Length: 389
Image (tube, rainbow, N blue to C red; front, side, top):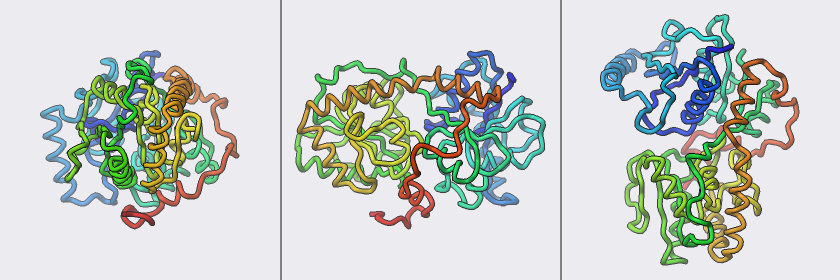
């Protein structure tokens, strides 16, 4: 099998963690001799049939993006020139390039792929429990669709097993040339903090900002840098610096300035920013959720606190500020541990799936139970969750 096609539900114009993982797989596979295509879809309707006004708007968007090449990821991610990029108006078989295997990358692309009769293999790269992004019944139905599942985290493998489905477990790979330690851990300002800002509520940015405000009252010399894709949040305190869409070189500098990285999400599939911060020598304080537990071990490689608890988040950061030896130990242990997640390992496991090897299949039972709070949050409509402030 040599022709692989990844199917994305959107354009590639903005940095998105899940899309970045797809691009990195594409780069790695094409360098291993595969013919790789990536399909970017302009319009993904969540209704059947699509509403006509949405279709009209989609046509306008499609033409505009086509003329400007605004759908491409050129501004933020370097793709191998050998990868074949496709920009299609709507996800239909007629628009897909020929391939030996198609890889769905989002619940709706999986839903569509499962509906079509084709001789090619159909895979489903599951990077999150995406009930936050679509109707729960339809999202969960894709887990039982006639597709070969690949999950990036153990907590997702546990859901698959509970649903009676087998899945290959392949944790994400990381680029250790892109991020690394430039400023020694012991030379960093212990009052320097970094955090990702995101406007999706379940990312916990509001909790993180509340925790940072608590810390600023305790430590007037606190220095904070945020980064993210959205516009700078309204009423951001003057003592917080916001970097919108920083290039990778500047993001590496930001990580290296930080002594502590805060990740306050309510749920994650397998989050990249805390891992990148670990790669860069920052000590990580994160919420105790399935995605973080993929590489965060409380008291060893990170400090973990309950989600939706700004006070607990602030207290954990304070502990690292007050105990510099603990901060240095956490930072170094995190940096050592994260090094196991190489792209060479991930790509080899992915190739085994493509060659239909059973060695990477998850067993029916996993090594720990899914924590109720992880899935409960994702099954609760955003804005109706308990504890929303």
